[in-house]
Length: 270
Ligand SMILES: C[S@@+](CC[C@H](N)C(=O)[O-])C[C@H]1O[C@@H](n2cnc3c(N)ncnc32)[C@H](O)[C@@H]1O
Image (tube, rainbow, N blue to C red; front, side):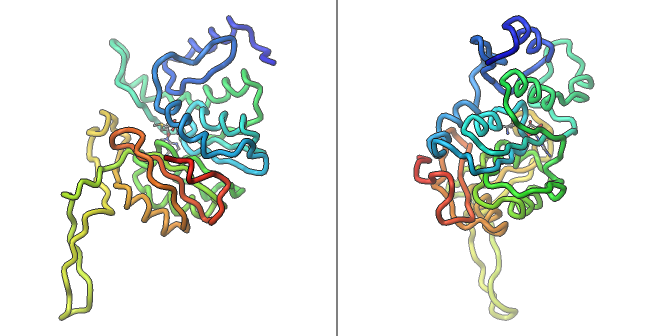
């Protein structure tokens, strides 16, 4: 039962200058009405979830206003933790006349997450924690959402290794990628001194983003290709992968697990 009235919800939403996540708050009210990637993703991803995940704990890294945390809780997860950075992060260009400084100083996503959770009356925990500091977490998790975050990290491999340390079962990975077009090349050397052969590699690469070339967003640092993503997660201890799902041009959705029989149905990702 929603204890907030329609006008209270509307007022609370408009108190924020911007919403990234589109969340259904009841009474026919959504946080905004633009088309979103996360809803498109969930329409695919939900097919991989069993009816109920009551035995699973879930960590949502870069949870924003909690869209995926909420979906996990609605699926019955026994514990859901969403974490967000306290650092400045902005996904959009400033509105006309909006001072850039002012926007960059705010990260109100956790406040939005708390608001949505309270309106929906869901038992979810949110915490200010940078993805660089996953070692500070006290528990391990069965399912980890790592969606739309990899390319925001200066040191993504360090975080991926930390995910390997705190995830018991499956990580749901979503990221921008370089397409493997067969024309990309790196050269490396194999063998001992005096008997070295040059090997041509066509995949397993990551592109450094020096300024704001990716989505005009200067908080983006890296774009990997699919094989690079898989390789980093393999080194972090994940052995089993779903087929890659390219739900949009240059966007990858993939599941990686430590278990041969993971909680999520990998075959349903197609
Ligand atoms: C593109 S949004 C994706 C949000 C959500 N995971 C989704 O897929 O809809 C990236 C989110 O990651 C958060 N973020 C970026 N860098 C982070 C970091 N180092 N630690 C934690 N969260 C971070 C941002 O604040 C933002 O909410």
